[in-house]
Structures are given as C-alpha cells and as structure tokens.
Image (cartoon, rainbow, N blue to C red; front, side, top):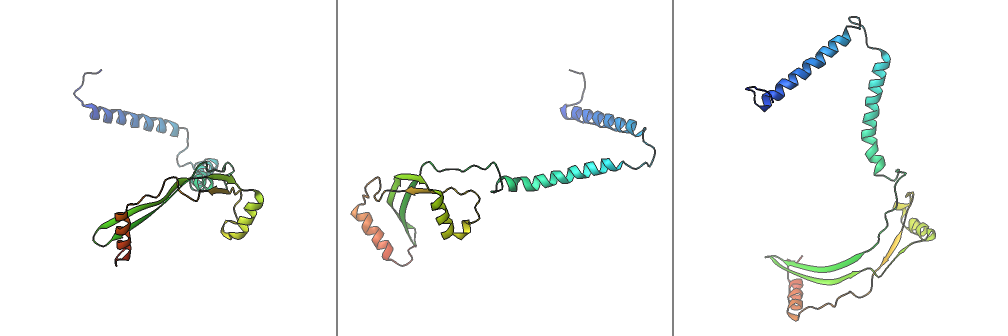
Length: 169
C-alpha cells in the first residue's frame, strides 16, 4: 500500500507508462549494437513472413479440414435410439388452430447395414457416391403407435370442419 492521491485507474496509467518506457529503453539499448540504417537480416524477414503466412493458412484451412470428411480422426457417429412423432395442425384464418397427435412412438429396431447394402444404397443415390466411409443404419418403427389415438368426437368434427373451410393451412 502506498500513500498517494491517485485513484486506481490513474495508478494503472502510471504502471502502463512505466512499462512502455522500460520496453522502449530495452529496444534502444538493443539498437546500439546495430549500425545506423543497417538492413534487417533476410532470415529474420523470411522467418517472420513465413510464420505469418503459415498462421493464416492454419487459421483458414484447419476448420475446413476438421469438419470435413478429410479429417483422419473422424469417427462414425452411430444412432443409438430414435423416435417418430406425426401430428396434424390445422389453422384457419382468424386464429383458430387445432392440433391432433396422429402417431408417437420410439424405434422397434435398429440395425447397421452391411457393405453390400451400403454399395446398393450408394448406387441408387449418386449424391452420396463420393462418401469415403459411409455407415448406414436402418431404423424400424412399429406399425401402430405406443398410445391409442383417442380423439373426442367434437374435436374430430371441428378439425373436419376446419379442413373443409377456405383459408385453411
């Protein structure tokens, strides 16, 4: 603790000025060993420029490489569970909205396809033909939902009426 009339920010400014003066003094002492108007060595320029360009290259190319299929450390990200929900939402001009849940269930089975199935899939879908390491999974859902489709008669009639009206989306 020092006895001073400076507030904290004035003290920071004083410390910053002292730091800047010290760095300038050290720079001037280092320049004493170099002849006036003596050019910088070529290896220093090449090293600094090369490191700068390498840094820019890494900054631009690294994210692209990391998030693309060119990444050698990329692992397949398998799906472990799935669910499917289908609902019908009817909205009418004027603000009337009705929503019915038609189907809601989780997967009945999940299998990883064989290489032959993957090759067949790739031949049928040319947009994925250039995939390096393709893992194909088949997710199966039951024909009927986990819960019964219980809809009251009034809601069913309301949705049917809204579907028949003009301006329904």
